[in-house]
Length: 377
Picture (cartoon, rainbow, N blue to C red):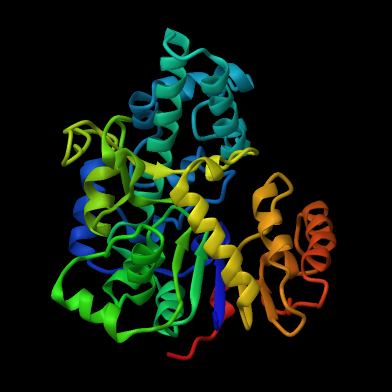
């Protein structure tokens, strides 16, 4: 039985306290983009869904460079949303990534396969994914989250993490920590292969018997799959090294990595935040969601950090309602919307209406931020 299930939304990464793990390498990585030394005080956390086109989150580069790297994406947003101002300012501050992803995904479905329009739509969708990967990668490279690290250090082998984020703040802690049990168990149970097939990790598998898993519900910056549908690796996921993923796989320039079997390009596995998520079309993601459902239904305690259950995320709402969480399960919700003085009163009212219906047996709403939490190692 799962002991504690941690559920992490964008607010967890956005609200964590990020620190530089290697200042020399961090400065070098930032200078590569900007050709000048960057002051660490301007570095931002990963953005929320409405800030991926905000110049404040492009502190490591210049907005003009993003326009040159991803011109089809920028022109698409300008044309479809009627935005005329300078990229990264004005109306760009209100562009919702979910809206952009959904529109591009509908284009892919609407345009018949084999047509130029279909190919262009797919290239646009891939470019949006690369932009997201680039933003998240540069916000977290050579940095770690103080509270992400504390959470991982407090894990029991039967605790499960359900992570809705693409970034690797939790991943790098789980992987670097001695025993990386949750990630290993995920690979063994869901992917049906060892995370690392070495004597050390086979011994780890034999040593632990807990049911804890690390489940990334929408994919991850360090997951890749082959783009060649005829290749056996096109139906599997490869888990890459965290630093390598941040440095190279999610760089906007350079040659994409190649499949070890057929030498075709591999792509980063990210499920866009769509109204109609394709999670049930993939056996791997079907298994991820199924294991998340089971973990929630068996948990003794559920801690939800930085996830606000947006009204368009029907799949996650379904997940929690279907779990039929036990009456004696402790539920803690850590969210800024718990604050009665939250500036967005309309959003707060929606949130306050939804929470009691999801957790009819009650929940703890005392904390408003990740950095208010205390963990016992």
